[in-house]
Image (cartoon, rainbow, N blue to C red):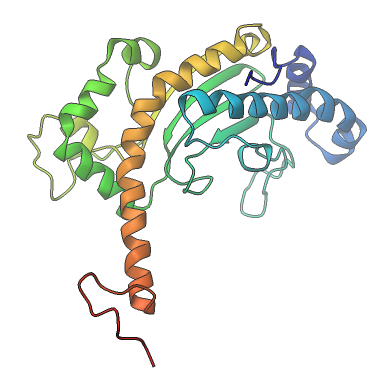
Length: 255
C-alpha cells in the first residue's frame, strides 16, 4: 500500500502562521478561516494520513490519525496570562498504541513561523513510569547506550535533551556509567530546520527518516511504561475481584 499523496506544507500556510502572529484575534481569524482550513489544517491532515500508511511498514504500534494526532489551533487561555486565542504554530503527535495522546514516548513535529521541528520522546511521564524507565536504563544500560551512541543517532540528534535533576535520584548509584541519563526527567530528541524546509519537496522524506532513526529510542522508553501500565491494571482488576490469582482454585466463585 503506497503512502497517501503528500508533497510539502504549502507556503501559503507558513504565511498564514506569520500573519496570525500579528493578528491574533478572533475577528481576523474568522475573516481568514478558509485560508487556515485549506493551507494549514488540510495539509496537516494529509501528512498525518501519509504517516499512518508509512507506520504500517516500520512502526505499526505508533498511531497516526487526524483525530488523535492533530492539535487544535485554539489555545486554552483559562489559566494563562497570555490571552491570545490562537496558537501560532501547527503540530502533530504520534503516540504509542495502548497509551494516551500525552503518555509514553511519541513522535512529534511542529511548523512555526520561523522553524520546523521534527522529533519527540518522553515529555511528561508520571513518577511511577519515570522510575520504571530509569530502572530499565540502570538494568540494561548497554542497550540504551548502544541506541543513543549510535553514529546515525548522534549525527541526527546530537544528544538526548529534556529537564534533568542536579544529582542522580535516590535508589540509583551515583557512579553508574549511565548516570547522566538517570538524572533525566524527560527524554527528548529532535531536529530543527528553517521553516522553509517544511515547504520543500523533501519534507515528508526527512520526517520519515527522522522517525525511523528515533524508533529504537522510543521503543526502549515505552517498553517499561507499558509493562508498568499492564501490571497496575492487573492489580486494579485483582482488587476489584475481576482476576483470579495464579494457582487459586478457579472453582471458587464470588457469592
